[in-house]
Image (cartoon, rainbow, N blue to C red; front, side):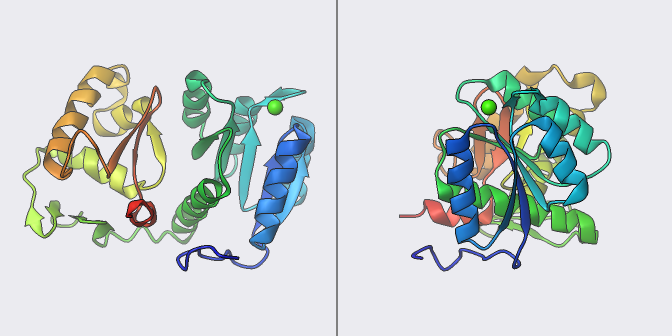
Length: 249
Ligand code: CA
């Protein structure tokens, strides 16, 4: 194993449910996950997935959307109605609508096929970390640190390389929301609802304008953002600390 030192090994036996009807993809996921000491359970359709979720509750679900007996988005909604188990959708390329629907239905993230093992593991780590924070209620409002950007929710302050950044209240709320969800993608709708309110969920243009403003304030090169990433046709993701370092070099 020549993974980087930061490769955090999961708590032994962290159980992941893989819901995927393609056997090749299942094999790829199984091999990758077992090598990292995850416990893997598999389901090839919605019926099996439903059974697995209740009989062997996993700590995270990897979910294909196109399943022979149903739709992953409906399954996401169903699971979300009773549990916060992180769900990472693994979807085919070029189906932005599917991704948005899955995220709005309660999925935590998505991976576009084909994807590499490192990307997969990084997303799983973010998902598990987020779940732990929710479960332990440790949403302690300490200073959030994402590379050069430090956010202090108590003081409502943002600092970049130690320097105070002047932000409007909306810009601050937007930045804080993305930072609290660092590593996770948020859809346009989710962001608009959180920052502006439920009646503004179609104002994607407004959001774009504010994101451009924010990038001018916190990115060293707003044209090549390193913190505030665009997820084409879906939304935005603040890169998490770990990925930021992976970028170096
Ligand atoms: Ca499929």
